[in-house]
Length: 288
Image (cartoon, rainbow, N blue to C red):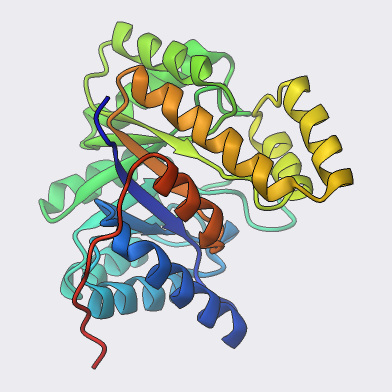
């Protein structure tokens, strides 16, 4: 069984304490030689400037390949493409193109009058520039707003056909969930890599909220295990074991790349990677 390559997702800091946490996360995980790291975009575009600053700084100081999240929310086409051009000028050539969540207080996504109406339109515009590698999101258990999974996969194919080169899935808890989705994508004619998204559970109550929001099924056996582990004070051990087992099952099933949602808490992700045989490598950093 070969050792997989990895990538990591961070979110931009909103405070000085958050900045220290982010840099600690980057420094802890950079030695694992990720293929890329991504930086998220807050709901409704609320962290647009913070995301740009974090992406630019990580790219400049760490030497990592950084993918910036970019959404269609609350911005004109011109404004969104200007953000993309600013990334290109800073040497950032990877973008995770997303429709984005509705701004706070709004129940559903409503396009800006002069903005991109969907992620497909955003991807087409980014692809037309010829400047970026474009990744997109995918839902192995159906997007909450999709009619059914077939419609969801058909929309994913539109995103790939528009110019995306790979898709990163929402997190899930069972390897078979990913394998069924991967097979359905292949049957639909999607040939681009589908990268599984892994969430090492640093906070059980938070993970349950995330799962509810994105339609991720939590098996009862995992609920029971965390109930017992919370009582016994062993949640980190359980989270590491579960994530490692999931990743091992995926790799045995042919997956060669894993994307970790770190939530800017690197320890569990680091421990899972070590358990998978991903050894740290020395890195030279530009800290000037």
